[in-house]
Amino acid sequence: MEKINFKIFLIVSLLLYLIGCHFNSKNYSFARITVPEVYLEPVQEPLDGSERNIPSCCRGGWCWSFTPLFRYDITAFVFGTSHKFVSEFKDTLTDIGLLWGNNASKGYYRNVKLRVMMDHYEVSWKYGDNFDLYSAANTHIATCDSNAFRKIRSVKTGDQIKVKGWLVNAKISKNPNETDPSKILTWNSSVTRNDTRGGSCELMYVANADDINVIANGPRYWLYMKKIGFYSFCIILILWFYSFNRKIKKEIKEVNG
Image (cartoon, rainbow, N blue to C red):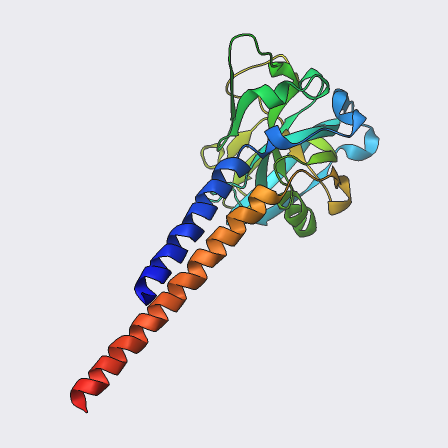
């Protein structure tokens, strides 16, 4: 009976986790946009004289130098995130899927399938539905500030956020003083909403945590279900192993006794 109970609890917790994962990835469709600024276009402005330099940094084995191109402020709805856990740039970069404009004001996002991948986003919709491809983006957000990095990582699908920073080009190398072009990676930001495919994503630099603001939270229940399922599964598995270990020791003691 004890074994059966452990199995049942494990199955239930695993189901909670899988259901939470499935619906949390679609959390954007359950959210309702409440911030009117999300209906507006991002603001892209020329640099002034004080914005010509952004500090370089080395994080996670890579050294980054940035060239600012435009000032960029955006208030948008988050339809997905990718923390690049398997990417070499995971210590500096986070991908946030953002939409705005008609996609937000007319609720197009609720009727489409959206997914943020490693370096891009995917969208599909059925005949009769609409989506404005020029009012959505997988935005690569880079920062050298640890507090800003933690804050952008705390953003969840379904949130409405405001982010201030710069569109930048980046040079990435293992050595901060690298001069060999063959050892320097170049990453250029898009600066227009009319491009598509590779190179059409914005690379945005954020200087500090105050430039990232979650102005309305999305639903959290599927996320909570996912976490409850995961931690319950781990705890029950440990208890099951502990119970099994005690039983084996008891049987060995009885045999030897």
